[in-house]
Image 1 (cartoon, rainbow, N blue to C red):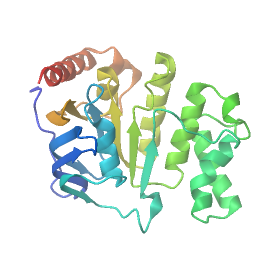
Image 2 (cartoon, helix red, strand yellow):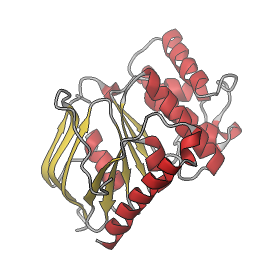
Image 3 (cartoon, one colour):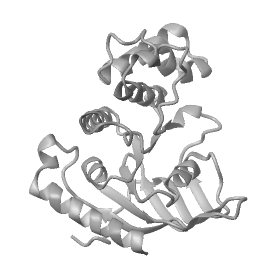
Image 4 (tube, rainbow, N blue to C red):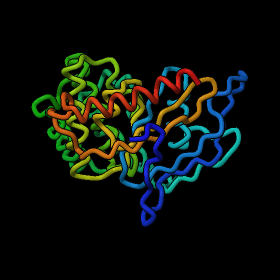
Length: 263
């Protein structure tokens, strides 16, 4: 497989997000991104792999409409103004309200949208259950482990059934066992509803395990140096982590990342 292979786009599926020659420079003069061209197909799973400082978080914020480019065009196939549930965002820090229970934290976006109490609590409880937190609905964040708090954060991001889920290194601070379990939870949730997912990571193994398409970025300024179609069966199984196929795909992705860091 060619490490610089371009991931194929389905011509019958319009992209949910397209970036055309996008650059971003902050008021401090820092050039975070330069000349990005990227199309993300609706319902796809894309991992963005790169070192710290390559503009991965800025890319997510541009996709979400939380910031606008200095130059270039971002086209979004969703409308955050009319339907605020179209974008779900999961950060590295769960950012939960410490005074609210897990159930209340997850139900918050529905409450802000005016959904009635019984419906929003039912939907929040269902997602918590699907993420392995049945029985913990009334627990506060301080009573939960790091992995459990991240599960609550993911449930909160998905409770509005967004069209696109943006994840900014959400599992980076977790131990390996918990990280693997959460990766599998995320893939299982996507089996039920094919929401578009853009997942930022600096872990080669995580990117290869989660996504059939991996976009590799270089830093200073941030730019795309490779767009890999990994082409293996999705979703993965645990056997994939130690398989020859998994090792080969990690080798390809690691080589692309090494070249990006030297660029």
